[in-house]
Image 1 (cartoon, rainbow, N blue to C red):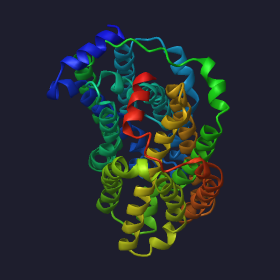
Image 2 (image 1 turned 90 degrees about the horizontal axis):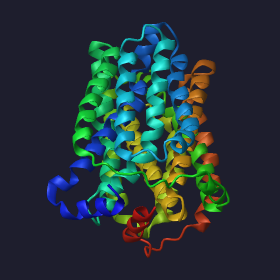
Image 3 (image 1 turned 120 degrees about the vertical axis):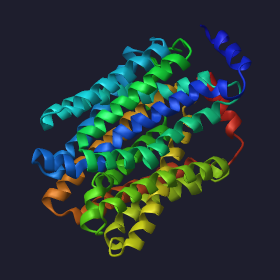
Length: 413
């Protein structure tokens, strides 16, 4: 089916039926994000089972993120011309199979190998899921489709991560991975039914890379991102043992805090969609400064359960605004080759995740887990200074290029 045929089909469908393919991709986003962060909720159990330290177990997060970072662009260049439905079904099948291997891992290295398979499927998934959602959405509903797919990430934090953690606590962490595999298989079956055949737009090519690299705005976004996310994940990768040891939270309370990150994500998304176009500087400022402040105050806030929860809520708003604002800025600034720009952003973001998890591990083993907030906050503060000096001066609060412009450009790219 060519693009004209896809457009005609989109225009012909109405109501819930028109949204079913996008809803299917939203469920896929949910399970992919649940898997990405599930080691954070099960870190202590995995470490205990294999007789290793939590910092050693944290390598699961580091290596996973770095594989995604390294593989995102090369894999997309390899599969750039693969029909979208076929590619989505293939990577979801790889995702499910890799989790079966995780569930039957007899040692840490086997678990690591299984996570590499998940990482490769993840690298391709996040490069194609949002453009795919835009192309199959009902006519004129591209922005809504993007918002719906992003909601899958927040729901993963609200339901996926806490539920996976609960299964791990009561039935063992291996069962969590097997359940994820089962859910992924169900989603794979649904996608096979719901997704239309959609030819690749072949928009990713090496020719677009030099122009992107020369963009000062994008370079600033990438630089601030890798530093900020490194700082964030220096602490967040070890938030589960930190809450247990430093804040005195029990297993249920930790699960509720992790759930709260997802709930705040949904609220933050609603606030963002309503106010961002006219207050871009404010959102970016709150995001970068808020992350740095939250990390630096983490140890002090852990003195009481109430202050810990309040700080985590503020921290969750800051990282949610960051993720939404910086992706929106890439769309605004990458007038050509948006998919390439987003692929590079995804890779850089995962460099930050891996670097943060590694740095946090060194802090935990070399100093104390109590210091992860200070270490992460110092890194995030550097990013905030760069952002205020380099990026914010180029940002205007004009709403002239609002949702309609974004939607038009995402359709074009």
